[in-house]
Length: 196
Image (cartoon, rainbow, N blue to C red; front, top):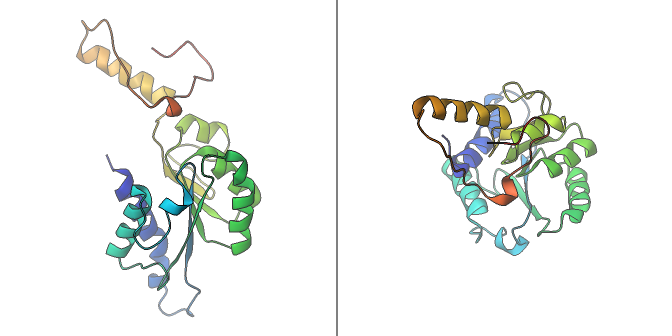
């Protein structure tokens, strides 16, 4: 299973490899990526050595791949700082800046970006798989289609049910199972019986 830091670095590398493949074409503008954070203070994600582990991991991964902010790529950093009502203004700002790609960690800002601009690519690092499909951000997990892709922290009810079934088969005498998760990431099922 890929860790979040590896995913962030890999995302940037894959999306930015295209300019190198087109050496015979005219020089294009420096790619611009936006990191849109939910709760991390903006002061913690700015500068060449940010305090935020997520921002630092992204920058370190990009540097390891030869991409340096301010040299051959531009990285814009924004944060709602725990105030979801700020997303609209932040997203409008990113649309006006014509960023190439926005990295977010939840379905809500991804949906707002998609509504604001169909041309802007969105990578979700986190989010609930069921919500991504339910909100119309992706066609399916196997084939997201469109301009939204990424990594989910929850695989959705169908996969979780299958995991429980496999656990019951592996340990048939088990009578109780505990599931630990961050409460902010737990999503109630949209239909069907309560989760086991």
